[in-house]
Length: 458
Image (tube, rainbow, N blue to C red; front, top):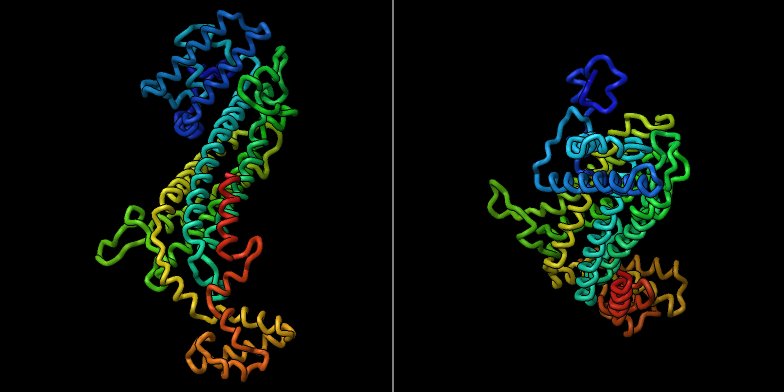
């Protein structure tokens, strides 16, 4: 009989040593120890509340668990792979400390509902931390947007110069995406904060437990309504990882722009030395490692989402050992996302914006062509006709290596007699961005208004 294992009574031979190592999860699930102990204290308190444990037994268990938590925090706790997981390691140590009373802790529960509870408690806290990091990043972007509300840059479609915009407006686009990410996290939190404890192995328990009491002790908003579902599904972890993937996708797109903008070809920004590295062979290099690495880590999180989806896709009800594989991808997703958001929130305030370079780039590529077309429409020309007229003017500029605003009035009037000397007001970069003076537009005053609105929301 495998005497060290709480389930050893059924068995007549010890676990194969390789199988023991292969099936153990304690090397990674020990990070849940605080939540495991918190859940155990609540469970013991509830058992005393309903009379399954005496108050004295409950107090011994609670004191013992608090001492174990301190041992783990101090680094003196001896984690044993032979005890498989975080639960058995803590429970075995509790029995060593307080004797047979420690064996009563597991009354009315299973490791199945125990681990489901631990993960939800863990993820609940991590979502709060990630949300705060998102707020830090959004705040940094909002503040930078206010400073750059009048900074003109080219707006792009297909990575081709399209229309002039303000850099502040561009930054606020990222804020809007990240705000939706934050909302998604908050919505996910509602489903995470549901308590599985009391479902036991799969069918509930015959002991007179009070799940409402336990949920109140642990701060859960709701109780899982079906014991089979409570212990067997990890859709809450999949939902979180899906949201994490979306956030990383947004950071990856932002990273791509920072990499481009910091290149000699764009030269729109310069990243602080604190967030870059050099080359081992080329002394002139300053590499945008942080944006590049965040862009690369996006694939890591995508992989974890695929892993969790695949993990669950063929499992029959209820709990299966497959679910031991849910923790490592979830943990790494949390760590990767937190790290990426933290480094971005630290990096953004240190961006050096090269305003003159942005403005000069906005002059290229006929970015005010749409403004000229709109001008003609206001003069009574049908839009499709104005589109063709401006296209012809652009063709002329390409052939003569010049820009629209450099053409004299006489030349412009060869394309349309509707053009007068007031046209130069719309051909300037400032005139173009100021004309987009509506909610969601790039006009400087709209940028300030939008930034103030976001500042209030966060």
